[in-house]
Amino acid sequence: MTRIATRGLALTGLLLLSTTSATQAQFLGFGGDRQNPSLNITPAEIAIDVPMPVSSANLALLLAQAGEGGDLSGIKEAALRKYRLHLAIALNARLREFFADEEIPLAEQGGLLSLHNRLEIKAVKHFNDLQSLEGVELERGTVELGGKFYYRLSGFNGRTLRERSLDIAEWKISEKYQVKSAGNGSTVEDTTEESIKLALSAVVEKILDEVEDELDAGELRDLLSTSSNK
Image 1 (cartoon, rainbow, N blue to C red):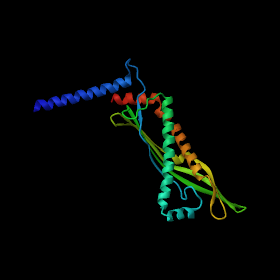
Image 2 (image 1 turned 90 degrees about the vertical axis):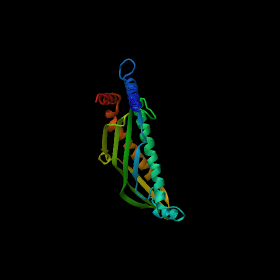
Image 3 (image 1 turned 30 degrees about the vertical axis):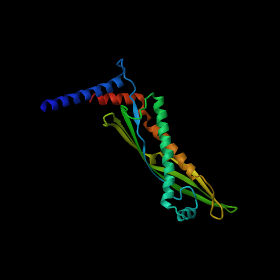
């Protein structure tokens, strides 16, 4: 029984040694020159909040829709899903473009490195003025974004190699919006949704500006090399 247990431990050790050697070979390359490590981008965790009404100046209309079998919180959640999707697509596309330029091979799973992202976004509307012209009310203001962005780089063994948190409010990202409403309360034009999406896209660009020097090919190679020697 003891011989079987000892043999099992020996086999486990050989497997671990084999896995580690294969990982190091993938990173070092056949000729001994370090190659760019493969990277897995995990789906971003996104929490977002926007003011109500979401895409209409007429809150009464939203309440009426909720009264016809809908739910006001459900209506808002549907809008939030739309913004989360917009942000997730924009961030993922921008990261993939950046790593392609850096010639970092992307892996769906099993990369030498994994990049984890978390975004917490809050959009706030700042009302500037309200005018009434020929039966049409014009509301104008700005949408400003606050919140946090956090990223974490981990090795293939799950150990955190680098992490950083950024305060989005410090960037003062805002977009102008306007809402035109007719005398009967119906909305003629509302650019709030477009303004929020433009601001979210601006956040993505600012994130890349802030972290690109920490995620370029040379930094990733050095980071993985340092962690391998520990």
